[in-house]
Length: 171
Image (tube, rainbow, N blue to C red):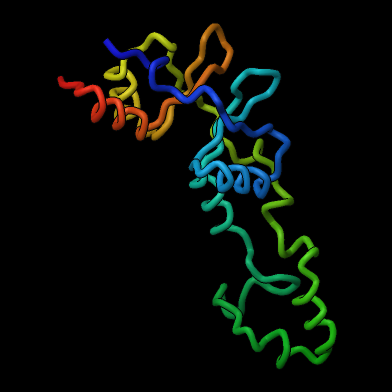
């Protein structure tokens, strides 16, 4: 029987709780993954996913240096910054200064603030069927593989699908 250790990824890209959301997003993009285990002192303390970061970004105010909208949160027309402000140079300066915190809410918030703390884990000797059942039952796409409280790998839905395709696993 095929075990999780046979298909898990053990060369993990991880995040530290103090990483900014931007650092986590960049690490995910660089590694072409949609989630990262959050590790502190070799132990998994959470998971941060692209969905977590997108939810934050969708809820964050998106207007650099200005109000969040007119008339109950409507989107601000781009002309607001150049036509409506009497201090045209100040508005233009805000648009050009991308180092301002308003441009980078992802840098102002940490992984620890938005990570999922409830960990769903498996032992390395768990079967592929157990991994699939756990994923389905808990509605997650990745499971942390833990051996004696130490993170040793990660198994994803893609890993399970590849195992089924390559090894002809049937039920």
